[in-house]
Length: 260
Image (cartoon, rainbow, N blue to C red; front, side):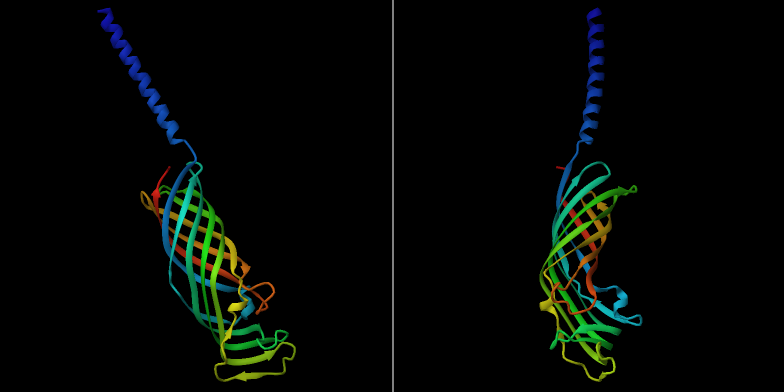
């Protein structure tokens, strides 16, 4: 009878020990960091280069732009550092661009025939910008809310494979900056001015956005990219102000490998 009681006591004790150990092991496993996830993504970028400051085109300027929509394709790797923090690096191929018609009150540019002459144009102009690039964003994420939402903040570098920028005055007034009384009225569209050869082949900037989980392995996000570098080469500036990349993006990402 004593043997049976001892065996029963040992079984209960062993069961309790195993239960406590399994819980401890489980909690330890849940807290092991870092964890890594790898996946693919696609989305749409909308935007191109904008004047900085915006007032450089004149206070009465108006613009009507039609964005060119192309899907982006890329891959990403995410490292979860803690329950709240992640670090992500991406590589994505993108095409962005706009075709626009604008009315400008103070558009200054360099004469294509004589780089020493600065000209001011006031009137209607049409322009087009198109870029294809390989972009590498690096950013940190912080989980917020109950739906696994994530605020992201970081920076990006872009290598630009192809860049096209053209502008054509349609109707208005041309005035050399060194001789404001020498006014030339434009009644018909002038020759298109191609500025592509003066564009640089790289860019960098800051990004911010928000992501939310669609289901276990997929997320949907929105981002804003703001360039910090002029799109023109430093020694071939055609305008007397900067043009900076600015884009919004919608991104869908899918984790092929999760928490490895």
